Structure formats: structure tokens, C-alpha cells
Image 1 (cartoon, helix red, strand yellow):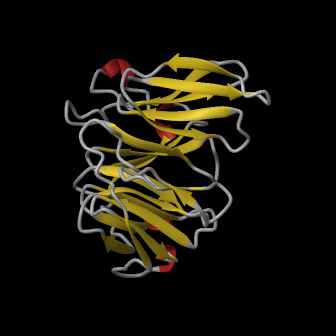
Image 2: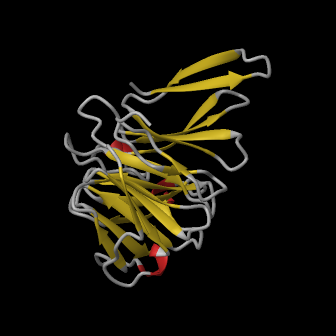
Image 3: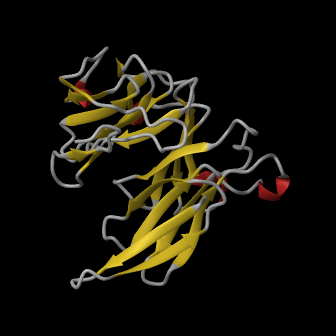
Length: 251
């Protein structure tokens, strides 16, 4: 648990492996920076790290803490809420890659700016669901945010209008069962949701929705991984309107 594995491939089909263990819990999500120089990782243990590929140095860019006053000046102070709390997902903010989003088992979403020191680095912290949020995805327009999780909803938020009061979603889609993931495509014209209803639901121009939405296309897909396998999440190609996803059935 907590291991990150890097593999170097060469033209002669040989490879070298590098194994890093800098999380104490499962590494929940991995994401390369835009220039490929560093690997961002988030973990269930409440930490987010950045691995510099050239130097193989790891920087801890965020961590959650309990109410121990030793950590009172840090952005994660008093965010840890006990045994049933964990950080579920983390992803870089494409507007500025020194910033990132984190979702939690308690339905919260954090935005962290690692350029800022101290508690001010926690740009905002809002409860967007009463249940675990599995993924967060920021539209290319930089303000439409999609969340999906155990409440069976993909919700759309305008983060320009997220204030101190509990925000309300701009639009939503009900997947009937838990949402494993919901991600915008590179162009932003499509959103693909992987659901425990055994479907891959594609919504066109979801970021323009103003009410309850329905899938433009729904693909039957076996998403039942069972207890011991990581849940499937359909993920887009970084440049094209193509996504890939695992399956329990043979292709």
C-alpha cells in the first residue's frame, strides 16, 4: 500500500522499474503535470505528494491533521475527522498546476494553492454532498466543476459562485446507483460517468445544463469489480475525444 511505480521504456523493448513508497495508505490517484516533469499523487492517508522525475525527490504538498495544535499553522489543520474520514481523490487544477482539488469521504471538496504558505493555502473548503465524493473534474472553461459519488448524482457547480454558505448545484444527473467517476473530455463537450448501474453514461455539453440532465448516450458495461479490485473509471485521452476503461467482461 502507498506504493507508486514508475517504468522506463526504451526502443529495444527493455525497461527499468522504480518503486517509491511515500504514502502510508493506498495511492488513490496519479496525474502527470502538463510538461511531464513531475507526478502528482493523492492517497487515502490524507496526503498529496509531487514526485520530481529527474531528481527522484518527493515533496509533500498537502496533508490533513487532527486538532493537535502542533499543526495549527498548516492548511490541513483540523480537517481530519476520525476513523471514517479519508481523502478520496485528488487532481491538479489545469488553470494553475501549483493548485489542486481534493475530495473526501465526508462529501467535502478542498482547493489548495501550494504557492501560498500557511492556512491560507486552503483556498476553499465546501461540503458538496452528504456522502463520499469519488471524483472531481474541472471543465476546460475553468469554472464548471463536476462531482460524482455515493449519492448517485453527478452534480455541476459554478465555482465562481461558491460562497461561504452551502452552495447549490447548477445542474445534476441521477445515475440510479453510485457514480465511480465523472470526467470532462479534453474539449469539454462531453462528460463520461462510470456508474455501478453497469453503464458508461455520456452527457453532451453538461457544463451548459441548468437543471436535471439525461445521458446523450448510455453504454452497457460490466463495472462490478467486487471487493478486492479497484473500481473502474472511464478516463479520457488527454487530447482526443476518446476514453478507455477496464471491464470484467472479455472485450
